[in-house]
Image 1 (cartoon, rainbow, N blue to C red):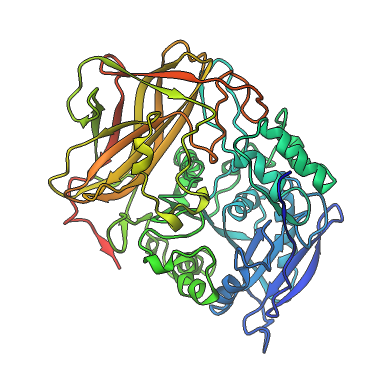
Image 2: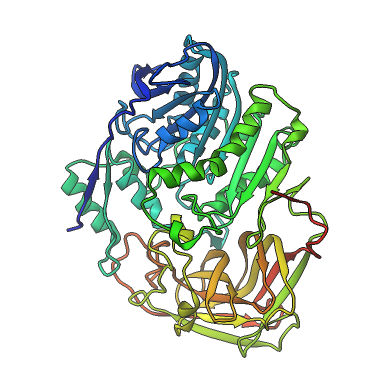
Length: 559
């Protein structure tokens, strides 16, 4: 039986006053109010408010909200931090996503009626508490003046939806089914590890539910047949009136594909595009940064370390709110796109993304394991997918990739991983923009998962992943032309380094592995080995398309 770790709510911060905010259906949500000067001499005069709505315990160590509140209140903002419905100290059923628009509206309405509020509200937060911002936008409360969502997406956590008539679709994350059993089973949180050797995985979930003595509404909503309940009162938040948005994405955030999907949708809507400001940082989902010294790469960050990092995390939002909430400064004071080229200091500014002057370059995989600008002769490469011997995920926690900054070179030594490498670069090359992998693939099994990982190989042979993508193909016995989105890259490849492509068919436990039989992976019992094939050369050769800057000397760099 899985060992379950139970985490309950922490003590309310002495700097906060906890309120019980009544929603339209009578459910009361636990809400901490932080005023400037609290707890010694709280300033209750009307002022601007930053709202944070999250399911991770508003008082807990994981999200350090009391320290976030301390930073904002020191700059004159009132801060309201709320456990979402059904979580920790809040009443109601813990149901993923579907109540956040109405609850966000009602909470903003409550804020505007308080003596310490001047009627202007902004929102800030990561991941799920980035999603609650998009939900509040969809509610269209007029007091919401600006949002600053980080490392999130409007379709965060949604199970993969097969598209009728389409052979390709996304590969399902394991967290899709684990999340509603950990954070959204009930008020508290329950953590346990998936046993990779015990099938079906769904039976492990049932054991956890039996130990906890109750079902999870959110889990049953998604398995065994996903019920896609509406998240927003409109089809999407972008159907609502535009709200000025500081949209932060991390180059190494595992949820970045969801963010980039939203960016693409925003760019198709002129009114939203005018209110959208993009910030791209060299960080992962848990705000570990690429340039961290080794001494800072610790799983449990103490308050001193967190306080030292808060300006990096919060000051961009403060600057944004000063303009769009307080009306101090001009809209043009905020760069339309701020981004960091990993491996270089500072943030750069652009009018649009990708940067002007960037061009596309293509590298082709060859039968002798090279990545070359020259198209190769026609050939086929093969590898095995064995559900009993899966390609391992490179980090124990996919959300904290840069905590570990793993060397993925050993993964490329496995026989079930194809490896293709460029020659050493003669000069520094800056990658800045979208990256893709295209190929024709097939399998002797009914369903095939295809993973592509782009790596920077240092002269000492260590390899750091800088981009990735994956796709699932059904009716895999017939070759399928796939175009795999690797997301966007902002990375300097140093002279003497090489680029490498890894190709394989599993990445466990981050992604649910194919059993080889065509059954859905979470509930599959039987498993068998599949042989996978990929074309090198020909009409649909394996190739990598990168976006490259022509040079760096003329780039504007801000400290």
